[in-house]
Length: 83
Length: 198
Image (tube, rainbow over all chains, first blue to last red; front, top):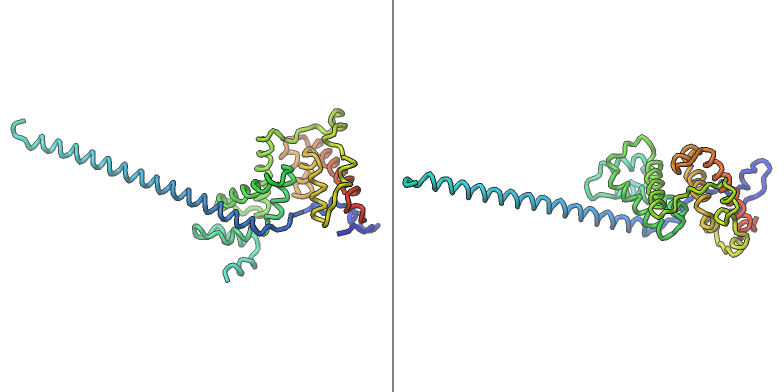
């Protein structure tokens, strides 16, 4: 682009006007790299979520086991006539 | 087919589509990125003054936009919203590097320093093939102190008040930097290969 001298439009000579909305040439790989990053983050977030759910399930199982053990202990006490 | 239909949508419709998309369907968002990445990459490059860092920063800007698109209220345009994310992210990056542009260009000790002076020899070595490269070559030679306010005002379209607020400087200081930045840009442009073509 050249800046032709113009008395009617002196701003046409000013290279500053070309800065408005200035953009670099499109980079075809940019969107692909971004999509890969998004996918990686979503996958790792999903894994964290899964591991959180897994941890909660394990805790629930553990507590159930403890409760059932405690329950069976007290039941056996009640069931023994000599105690 | 769907990808083609997305091309016909304006930004506002694409944002709606992206917000309503099923998890994992980023096609509408990717189309928005295609439309804005050139400008965002340019801005990041000229705010931080580094091509390598700008690439990562531009990726971060769109990652933030993607993971926050659901909270975007659509009261402003997508480009304006991304611009806010971008400017904040790039300035935070400069802060982290200790390179915040807080030099007072009106102070005598600074106005005569090499940091805000135009090197009369460097521009002559420019061998620019096209207009974009010419603009790029001129901008990248400028010091942060003048380039960042110029980019925010004349490339991003922020008002003088917004530039002052964004950079944490007074309105008069913002106006002075933009004025000096424009002068420096014109001067470098005039002595560049591209300027010689006029």
